[in-house]
Image (tube, rainbow, N blue to C red):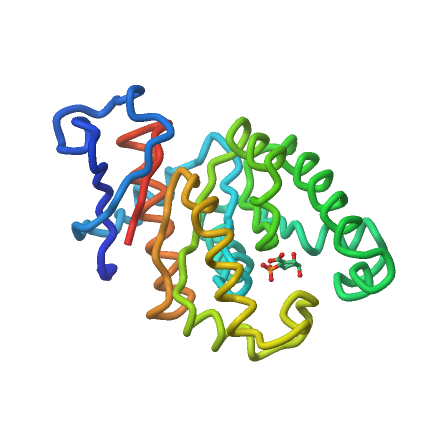
Length: 230
Ligand code: S3P
């Protein structure tokens, strides 16, 4: 199966022109992806083990949990969902936490839960959409994890989030407008992620294929450098 486009191309880094595999000089610069790459072979997938926890970031509805769960299955790694862990720790659902204690309390718990999860052995970690906006969480992810941004367009996010009403932030007005505002605030910050994978068209399995290919390409060709994959 081929993805629409999954090549990893760094806009400025010579290593990404194919010249060399290591490019520490490019660390923390974003990659752009415009070329198609074959999916990794089943043998490559079977032998691939990330050395760090793979942290999925992105807006509500971007598929972090559903992609993360399947990705973990494909890589035979544990899956953790930060939102579920927060709910478990609080003994309350997220809407209940927001209603009873407020968003600041939730954010504090979110930061502490993610810090704890990042100390666990490598796994696949889905975070809530606001988690990466916390500078301490971003620093912890940069230090101990590998961030992958699932970048999805507004229409698709609106369509997906309309299916359920368990997200307190989207119950405060027009969901499209709220998501558009969050995109404006958050996408520049999400863009710090080491790897960006464009999602939207296609089902969860296709997205998992794309994430897997981007992850393996990033890990094998760059080791530590940031990447973008469309
Ligand atoms: C939030 C996203 C939610 C959840 C909470 C706040 C956000 O997680 O953490 O409702 O600030 O974007 P999902 O992104 O998994 O829906």
